[in-house]
Image 1: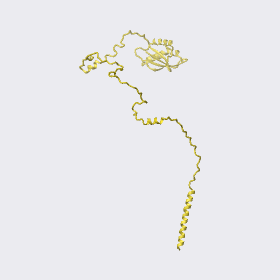
Image 2: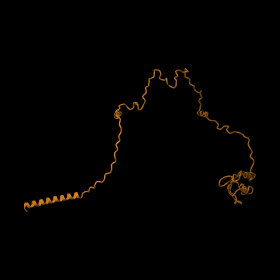
Image 3: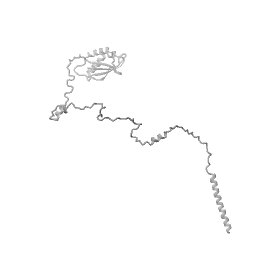
Length: 250
């Protein structure tokens, strides 16, 4: 192959390479991001300019305030009043004092007023016994009033409503029941405790027998008062319909 032919092939190769590079640049430029058209800009807030009338000496006053060499801890016209204080004459320091001076003494020598001497106890227990309060409540409430002899009674009866605890009988009827209960004669010779019965009353009288809820400790006394309430006191005829608690004590 001749030299001329080889040189022509090289020139065509360079030309083809340059064409490829140019084509790539054109494609890159055409395929780049498209710029959007600028939109309408937001309106800016209007800035107001305030005009202030300045005094002719305002700049000088500000400069004097900033460059004031006076120490802040010293009194000035802003934190204290400037008063002219006249110095006192010699010997007149306490002339305006509220208490007059006392320049003399009534007594020539001091006196010590001590309490009288006390004998020291021989034993420690004697010191404790000296401060003992004594017999507490000595004589308080010790009186001998004449004793009142209470009348003898057989029993004491109290009738209250089972739901409210209020008295079931008016005062006059209750006095009659108490007088009849005082004449009761339970079996003697044995001590008995207070007892309680539960009674149910309707329009016709007692509903069933009395229920013994608290015993006296003596069966004869329990049976006696259970019969006494029904036959002698007749509680079924005296009470209104309802439930009642009947207490009996000695």
